[in-house]
Each structure stands twice: as structure tokens, then as C-alpha cells.
Figure (cartoon, rainbow, N blue to C red):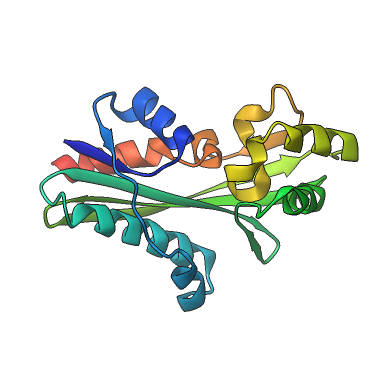
Length: 188
């Protein structure tokens, strides 16, 4: 059995479309703030969070293949997570407006004694955003559960992103291309 250790609806959708339609979801319950306290490098943070999510689920499902991931947005030296409230979402989107930032996703695959971890990095270039556009987007509620307070999949309706570089699926929060490559090596 394949287990996706995530509550993210976007990861579920990408899992179904790109990796396997046959899987179950088990939501891990970990304290992500510990990774931010223990590490300063963004790669170490997402790697640690995804590993702890994976191990949390795998302890009860050791023979199953467990896949976990964690995504953060980085602007300059600042890691931007999910907004706390609408005001925070506005502040984040205002900060990202007209700038380039990076999206990092750490992921972990575990089955029995086998463990593989990876990290994906993509670049996102934002358009200049008006306050009206930001407020209209926030009113949809979509930014509230996303790192960086935006979803690339919302770009058709709200022109937030000018261009991207790297894996689009990584920007959405699940670098399926890399995960599929690792799964091929994992299974052999």
C-alpha cells in the first residue's frame, strides 16, 4: 500500500494524477517549529520536516511505502510559511510583489528499512500586484493554507506570477518528477 503523509489537497491531487491513483492519506502530527529551532538552512529545515512527517506515519505502517513532503517559500534570507491571518497574507503578497523568490520542497520516501530523501528548488517571478488584486485574492480564502500565501494553480484567475523556472509541481508543493525518479530507484 502507498501512503501519502499529508493533509494538502494539492499534494493529493498531484499524487493521483502523476504518481498513483491507489493510495491512502494519513495525516502526520508533528511540531514543525522544532525544525526551525534546530536548523537555519532552508534545505535542512524542509528535509527535517518531511523526514519527521514520514517517520511519524511509517512507525505504524512499516511495510507500506510512505511519502511525505514539506514546502516553504524563500524571499532573500526570509522563510515564508503559511499566513497566520488575512493581514499576514496581505503583507506576504505585498512583499512578494514584483520580486523573484524560491520554492523549496523536501520529501521523504520510506518502506521498511529503505529511506530516500530529496529536495527540489524552483524560482518564481511575481508580477507587480495592486492592493485591489491582493485583497480580491485573499477574499477567496485560497492563500490561507499555502506557503507564501499563494497557489500557482490560482494564476489563471489572479495574475500573480509572471514566470517560473524549475518544476511547476514543486511550486504547487509536490515535486512529482523527482519523486518518480527516486521511486524507480527505490523499488529496484
